[in-house]
Image (cartoon, rainbow, N blue to C red; front, top):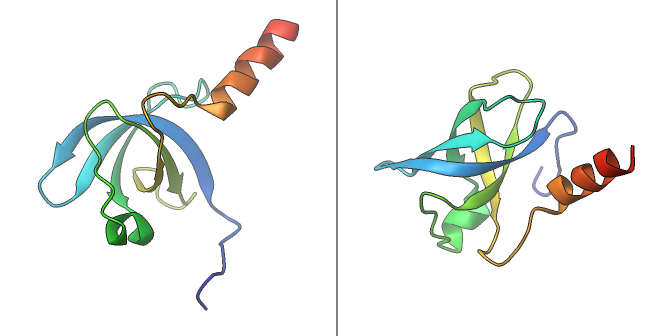
Length: 97
């Protein structure tokens, strides 16, 4: 059914390290719990349709399932002037503690 979102999806933030010719990317996850975990990701369908360009060094939001921890799907590319909202919230909460 179109438009339904799966509940067993893990959202992560990362940086594109490498691009491959078949529209796949090597992403390094930035969350402190991941400890520099590397994923092989493809573009989400709506990003592919709207022709979003992904380059090395771009900050992206990645979705992955808990069943395969090596693959993911890029669902959002942050602009260069845009900050990671989730990482800022984590930094503020750790400063308050």
